[in-house]
Length: 418
Image (cartoon, rainbow, N blue to C red):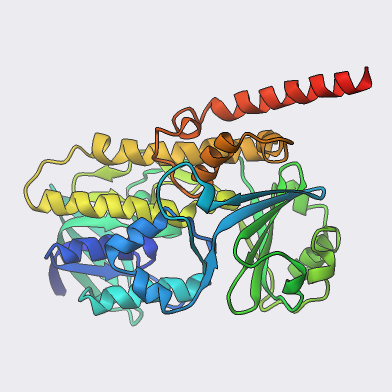
């Protein structure tokens, strides 16, 4: 059997895997990526957040991505019953990037993968991990290629950035259910010939359809727009017919963009993604670290997926370099706890979104500019800035703010009646 030796084996050639691979490779270590799919391949997660730009910069990817001329993104807009709450990343509380991109992920991910290959990191596509044996930090990974050929890869460390594939958690029975309820998304790409009707395309727009149900609108630079409805499975059970019939019916039921998207061309049969939330016992073990969606995928509402993927891989890649250079790493305090800070902050916002708490905040009159800037930082992905009270106190701050708004509005209404 053919055996290959590397310092670090990276599983997955998406943003998580390529960011980690680039960082380790730049430190002078031999890295190899194995990827189950053939690129380009379709995946959602098309609206990035500014915080991920720091990881893309350290990995050396920004110039290559700029060359693709993806749609630049400068904020996020929320819409409900005609009311609009617009967040501009330029107004955020945290110092950092104030823009990012909206991307077709097939093209974006291939750009990162092609760039890391040019840096000298080989990628074996259509290669499946079938087994891993650990001997302390050292490992032997068995892989099978598209032709059925089996080989082994010896590595001093493994970084698992396999995304939804969740290779190590599944091989070692580490998967655990998330505390978020199951949800479903129905989505497609639309030829957006009436885009001029909207004040886009330099932001994502999220429309509240009803409590717990929302729509994403993500314009691309090509004149195509990604549109998707998200809600609990019971919501979609109200609508019969094919996935295209369901999505067209839902579009026609939504006044905000019925005229814009009614009878528009769908580039593919609407796809379904559901029950995506999952987590794992821990994000590391002797000889491996988990990054990206392998750690935990929450929900698409705040576009956190690529940010958590790239930032976790940025952090993990640097720690792996230090480990290979001889430093003892405290993976709990140096990796898992910081990552959980970010994950849990996003989780609080996801839960507040679905229960309607953020509706109260986003669509309130006379919003406090400082508070809005602090919440804007979270929407920009700066969920590790604990100088921001809406990060540090994420479990309680949103509910306290919503309560104050409700009390204020109630008193105002009482006075107006008097």
